[in-house]
Image (cartoon, rainbow, N blue to C red; front, side, top):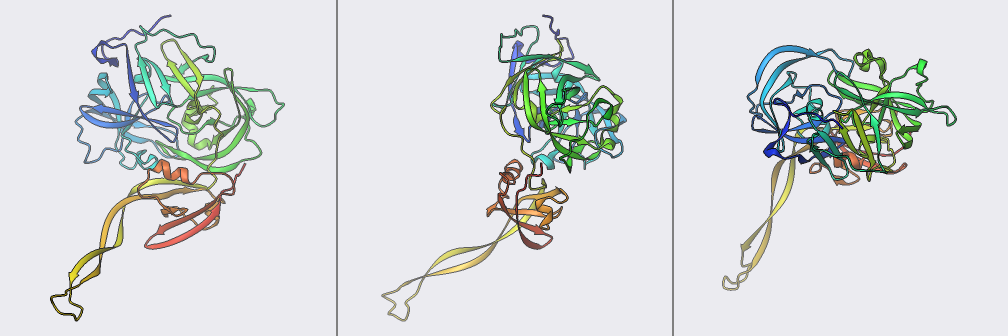
Length: 434
């Protein structure tokens, strides 16, 4: 088996080691890696669907000296316009003890474009092809650990529980041939070519194509699908009867059909029929081998987890901090004689009230699905969640708060929200749409 030779200018494992292990955070099915650029610690999303590294969300607190070159226009998913970026080069780019010198990347200039608010943790950029191409990359979603192997020294183990599938590439992005049965149980499986997109949190995206019999199922609903570099992405959500990846099969998997305007630029590759995202990928231990154009899959502990939809209709984001005023009591011990002789004395406890102000996280409704349970009771975009079912949320992570909005159908949800300066209470029950 041939490997990739490690030449100067590529990512290399420091100290002559043959492998490196890196822990990551798994948030909303996405991989968040700790990186270091020119000595500054940051967090990057690992996205197999990205060609060149992208940086954004830089602010005054991010002291980073990077050589900047010409300005360019970038186009991403979403129905908005192109965005302006600067082609730049970092002196050093490190992921644990993996190092690359003079990494070329794009810096997005628009401060409004970032992923931090939607994930609830600082996200400074995205990296993909540059690191995948230089290693054999083993992603273990269960242990939240990635191992990077020197491909010249790597040896595959025999694995009867694995499936090895070929990869094809276009613009340095990996594609895989799989099959899907969309609605009818007796219909023949439809072969589809999908981008392996570790930077997408959904399970499966399909592009509607009547010529290939890729049609939207009868049971469906309109929804917000996410945000790309070029704006918000809307579309239709549903389920597919069957989805086959090698010898593995999923039934009733979630699927999204993005609006055609949001994916206009990716349709230049006519053979592409959609994407496999993080909610499918996390069900496997995945080994990417770009040099030999193959991927190996083995079941993870998430494999049999059910595919849940957002039954509340609420999409949250972390929108900075808010000020909370608290009334507290302070005990003071005062000696008095209560009308008795001064030699007898006495003790009286006096409660003094005082105000305490603190900054807490503000979890705001960013999107709300039309006709969803939350929308029907009057919740609105911009409402700030104070508590869910009596539990105050301002000290929790966004991932945890989002999880509190999930559950079985008919579960009662009681929300206390701040709208402007007014506090409102709402109650609804989760409802399965499909």
